[in-house]
Image 1: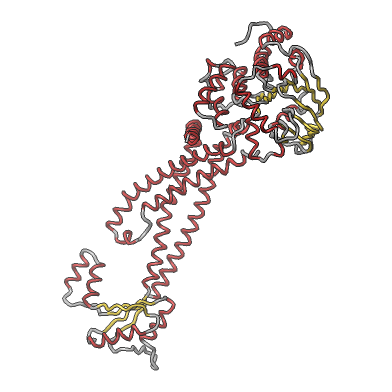
Image 2: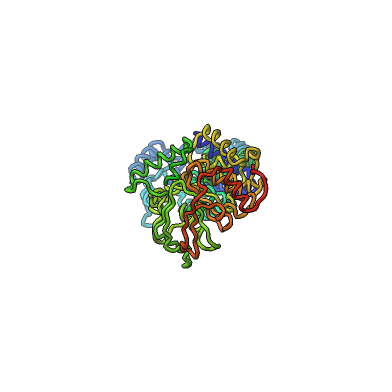
Length: 302
Length: 282
């Protein structure tokens, strides 16, 4: 306990005595943490969007308005019997209208009410176990007849539509975005590691004589190392705390008001603020502490 | 050896150390090995320069010995070899009967805690006060806070710097800085004290003060080995002189006499013989 106190006080003494390099190290960490703090949520959002799109792949079977109840029930049984079909949900005309109304806002919703009739068809939403089987299921519902036109298994079916083409397009775009952002993030991480390492090396190099003296009076390597590591932890924590404060300010003043007025921003399901903060603080601290400890090694060779 | 026995003024702490040494000695075949023993030690620096060539010598416990020789004769190499800063290419370095080059690297700090070292350039920590510099040597060995608070002012008083206890090294004169470094080297009461040109940067009067301090430390039972090129001082001290030249041992003289003079008598005599006027230092 006494020893821990001693190490901590040694670390603070060193920080006070070499204020300029310490501030340089803190600023470096603030900048990197800030960049990571912006990149990680964006990366996460684009990934989640891709996953979203993949999940949504399914078939929609639209029905004629004059389909009878018996026809619909018979069709549902037939659809469930098809291989690879996981679930079938009947969406009536009323339900379709409600879903649409839920998606629209303000004036658009009002104008929907003004329509006297419901233009939306009833439909079946079909979930498929794997996007690969989409075509097979689609063919099973509406096999192509001898004349080249689809021959649906039920006279109630007006059209079979799949979101496959849209989905692959979205997947490809978001995939490219993810890769670019990922590369950017990795480059940034490497650059920041080098930068932090270099800053720490400078501050330790300035004190190499001190380390030499410590070794001469018989200090063990860990006795010399601990204050430096604790110093790194303090620098990392301070830098991360400042970066998180700036991020939080950004979230409150820019992102939150935006997501209230734009559904698009809100829709992006991204990382929660708390896990993001924990990740950032932990990584900044570990990088800084490790950087101190590893850099010191070359001065500790007996 | 008889002269070591005659000094029964050893303080209790030193006796504790001696007991510890004795315990460790039991594991070695020799009953009472010399504190320092070199056996054909040869040091070759990278590039092929031979700094020490087949040097063999023994220094007994409680001895006060000088190592002299011109610049580049291997004096400093000898000191560095004794604290395992550098390792010999061949030969053995035995401290208290143990070959220090067989120690694992993790035990080297423990060796250095048992050897006080003093340098020409003092090697003080510049951002610590006199008190903190001395206390650091105790913190390193894991001394309790009470122990540090008791021993540090005591040793600073011994070297005569109680009035400068909260000064930083750059606020002290060369002689005062060397006193701090002696205090740091001696605060753990090591059985062996090495001094590499302790008076190299100091004027004659200050040098006598430093030598007097080392002499006083020697009288508590600590073996003191001083490396110097100050031939005159060495001649006047009348202690054992080991001379090196081009890395070879060329002379090893055990000078007699004056062994039991007091510190005060010693200083007065040396001052007189060197022709330095003035009163007692401190």
